[in-house]
Length: 142
Image (cartoon, rainbow, N blue to C red; front, side, top):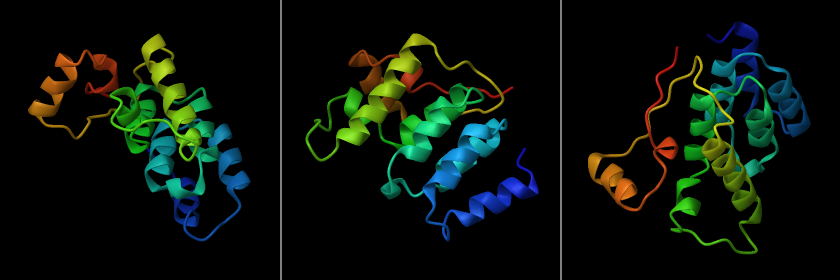
């Protein structure tokens, strides 16, 4: 899953301020489990350069992409619970990138699974509102 070097990189997220280092690591990683762990541990207040690098990585599978989408709360953009404005344009761009790619089948199921933390009522609401199931369905990792 995640090797010792990758665990060390995750721990460095709190102490290193050089985001270019984490972007480079994200671009070069061949481990989707590491990409997911990095996305989960990342401080999203630091911007979207690292999440974009993860989303652009050819080893980013459907489970990792959905993790990014839900961590970014991209569903709020799709459901129009949050409107785009001058202050959230980076978030809008990132969320829209993921929405477009998820809808187009850019990300394929792979090693990483994903299960959104939503209840049946929310799932029913999404279905009733015609939210594409790819945005909120469970993905079983291989």
